[in-house]
Every structure is written in C-alpha cells, then in structure tokens.
Amino acid sequence: MRLFLFFSTMVLFASAVTHSIDDSSTLVSELVNWVQSEEGFVNDKIQIRRVDPADPNSYFGVFANADIDAHEVLMEIPQSCYIEIFDVAKDEYVVQDSAEDSMAAYHSNICNLSHRLMEEMELGNGSEYAPYIAYLKAQKPGQLPVSWSQSGKDLLRQVLRPGHDGVDWIDMYFLQNNSTNQKDACITNDPFEINMLELTVQRSYDAALIPIWDMLNHHNGHYNAEQITSIYDEVGTIVHASKAIFSGEEILASYDKCFDCGDDAMEQGTPEILKNFGFVEGYPHRWVFNGDDGKFDGLEDLWFEVHSDGTDERWIEWWFNETTGVYDGIQNNAQMLYLQRELQRLDEVGRKFNLTSCSYEGYVPFKEWQMISEYYHAAKDAMMLVIGYAMAKIYSHSQI
Picture 1 (spheres, rainbow, N blue to C red):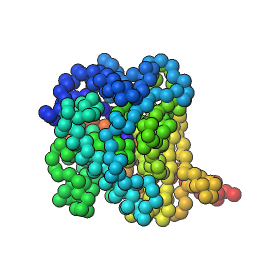
Picture 2: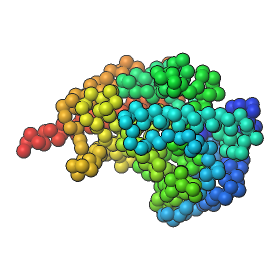
Picture 3: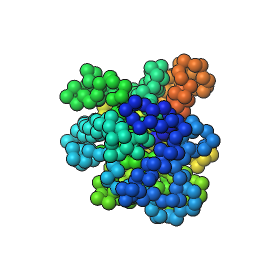
Picture 4: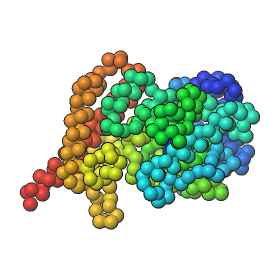
C-alpha cells in the first residue's frame, strides 16, 4: 500500500522533534540530507515542494526542476533508512489457501509495522530515523475516510457498494473489543494508535515505510517513475524515470502497479484508492467486482477501467484474459443484472442525499462532501458506461 497527500501541520505528539507549520522545507531538506548520509542518492534534478509554493495548505509532491532523461535514476533509498518488519513479515502475495489468508497476512503486516512506527515515534529525537520521524509527525491526521466525521462516514458508506469496508476497516479488522477476529485485534481506541495505523496503511510498502519514495503522488494514467529494484533487494529501493520528464513536471508513481505490488492492480480499484489513500484517483478509474468475496453475485470476476483522453470522450478497457487471449467483458446475465441494480441504487442514493445536483447543503464537512460527490459521480458514470457498452454489444450481435 502507498501514500497520498501530506500536509505540514501542528506537531502531533509532545515527545517529538518540534517543528512549526512553516518548517516544511526544513523537514524535507533534513530528510534528504539524512538519506544521503546513509549512502542513499536523491537526484538534484528533483524538488520536493508544495504544488503551489505560495499556498501553505496545498499538497506536497515531487517535481522536476530540470529535464530528466528516460531511465535516469531519481533516487536510491538504502534499507538502513526503512522502518521495516522484514524479520516477521508475512508474504501476502504468495499462493495462499484462500483470499482470507492473504488478507490476514496483509493485516498482520500492517499491525506489526504500525507498532514498529509507534516505537520510533515515541523515541522522537532518540530514534535512529529521527529526520523521517520528524517528517511523519508533521503529517495531518484524519486524511482517510475511516477517520472522517461521523456524518461523512455515514454518507460515504451509503455511496460505496454494500458490504465495502471503506470506512469501517479499523473497527472490522484491527480494533480490540470490536474486531471480528479478536486474536488479530491490533490497537485500542487510543487516538495515537489509530493515527499510527492509519498512517501505516497510507504510506507503507508491504512491510516497510520508505522515506522520499513515499512522497510521490499517484496517477495510473500518467505515472513517469517506477521502481527497478524490489524493496527487499539488498541495494535498497532504486527508482528511475520510466519516460522523459520535463522541467516543472510532477513526478508520479502508481500505487498498485509497482515492482512489489503483486496482483494489486487486478484486485483493487478506485474504491480502494479512496479507502487507503483518501482521494479519488484521476483517470483511468478501475472497478473490480470479485465473485469469490461474497459481495458480487455475478458468478465470475468482473474487471474494467474507464479511460478518458481529457475531453468528454471516455471508453472501457476490459481485463485481458491470458488463458483465452481475449478481453473479458460482461460474461453473463447475473453480472449485467448486478450492475443494473448497482446503478439504480446509486441513483436512489444520489437523489436522497442531493448528490446528483452537486449542491452542498452543509450536513457533512465540505471537503468530505467534495470527495464523496466526486467518488459518487465516478461510480455512477462507470456503471452507466459499462452497461451502455454491454447493451451496444448485445444489439450488434442481434443484427448479425
């Protein structure tokens, strides 16, 4: 799993290195210097800054301050800079007896890594990762839907597919006295523990938190940076430009098509990006309906992406079935019926909560409402588009 937006705000914990909200550039500079002192490398053609340097509330990103050639190395982060749990990590991507076993391995890693992060946070200046800890302490809590206001969570729960854990995953999998599996319960209701778990989900790569690499923002349609080594490689994480990058351009990565991502791109989509990172991704929007998770009564898995060329033109790309050598579309009537019912449900939710008109009525914090509205329209548009494609295919076949 990866990161998202990071905002420099107040210090979260008194035991920490103390920095004011105006120290974001200092925190970044100290972090880069520390990584380089550990024999890491950060290309001097990249700059970590706010997207709008004049706006202290704008998000951070990594930008090119000079033209960068394709395949030019952007950074090398040694393992000595990782906060990691490699000695106890479980491989969630190996063949498991069931999807539940794979998810249990992921939950175990997240839990253990969050506790490792808590230890370093409490050490503060005494941590061997002090510059990284100082940067993490300056991140704004509550960026993920799981920590939104109650009204925001209630509304998003209505919009997400029934049964989706997008706002309830801490309660369901990690919270003591509330987890569905108490032997796996990880944290208490302590705000510090909750924030560390949330931060771990948002910024970690499998079993490690990796500085600077975790500062790249996500875009599956336009990413221009990628790993060329595994995070588990002894040389550390090496990232290069996957294409030429021009001066001033933001350097972007994919959070689910990375070297160590396994099958994430086949199993997670736009709803999971919102759940784990707190934003609605740009095109392409991916929608994954799994026939074996008990939530999709469509007999077979369904996977598709909605693409856009930046205009009103949009199109569907289906999952490519390597066994048959063709792109799988809607495969049976059960899938079609499910999607039609999902579209009807979204339409009803939109009318009930005034999401169809995009008219803000103040019953949910504005930023949360904006995110929910954006997700709602992405989901509804995807259902309309994919059903339209399927109906057009049925009609064309009937004319043969």
